[in-house]
Image (cartoon, rainbow, N blue to C red; front, side, top):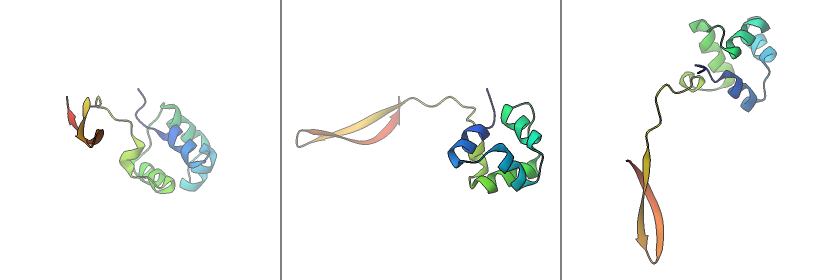
Length: 89
């Protein structure tokens, strides 16, 4: 499992690894290695990456927890079921 979602976020933001490398002043190879998951960025570079990509730093990471199974709650009114929220199963 990859820890960082950098490849996905770069695609969403329409940036290349080369452009990101230039903006945070590291080599293109450094970004390439981070995207591939073979190295992890220094904390200061992680902050720069989040800033340049305009995301919260936590959004750079994949979740390490299994998603909770949720069940949708509905109300029935006037012959129509309307979702009102979710609860844990």
